[in-house]
Length: 386
Image 1 (cartoon, rainbow, N blue to C red):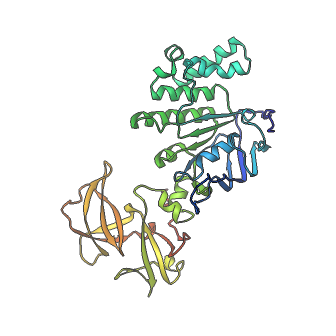
Image 2: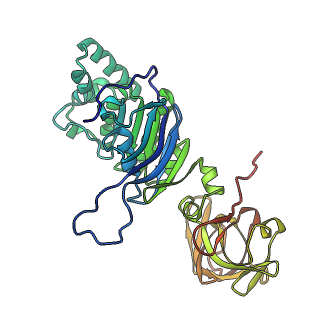
């Protein structure tokens, strides 16, 4: 029997602290042997009052399970969950003061917008006057327009309107913690961009502690004060985008964060140089001191190559195609170094007729990893911009 008493908070915000949270699921009958573990494995995480943490990772990595455990929709097998240092591990979901926004909106289809927002007040037996006041305040803050949406059935609302009502339904409850599970992934690209901007403004305005799950890396960067990277139920690293991008904890984080992704190339350290195939590149002494002799892996972001058309200026690489990527740059890919396909970002005026280029890594931006496993041997660290 789970406890149903309510969380005694003195503010409308709550820090959230997870300590060694583990949640295992029983594999379904007939599931093949050797499947990776599901659920959560020893996850520890702290979200400060009013902070938004984005959660990214491959499908099945435990992102949604993490939300459910924090909300109380699932209960951890081990570990503790604290809101404002108050133990809520055994509290029922309705007692935690959590607002959840789902990918599929989770609205009551038979109710109008007003009844979707006002259901909370019916359950809590609030007065009609308080209900009316809170609904109008929230609708105005959300830019919904009380008369425009409140008397319309859910199935007559657009995707963006439904999502606004879904978010407003959470805000009207004045939650301690906001949990968002890919809340705008069903919207088209243009509406998704405008909606995420509105959500971020609201989160900052109300200062609500938020965990924001998304599969979209750009969305995670935009929404989160920090980003948590998950894999196979484990928290690989949490930090700002710059911390994850320039100082990744391991190879997995380094290749997940960044678009186009990091190039990872087998190499060898010998004779005070880095050998890529038959080409030797002199290594700066400060990097050489950190690397073991023998096999390593070099990581170079597509924008961190120095490109030359002159033979002898670095590693020769054939150009297989040139394609437009952004408004200010193009990318070409398909050439190989040490048997590895390499992507390079170049200026828009790069000649599409080019058949071969010569590449040098910008040594201030390179990464090195162990030849096996995922250990980071050297990362560039965030640049000093000031």
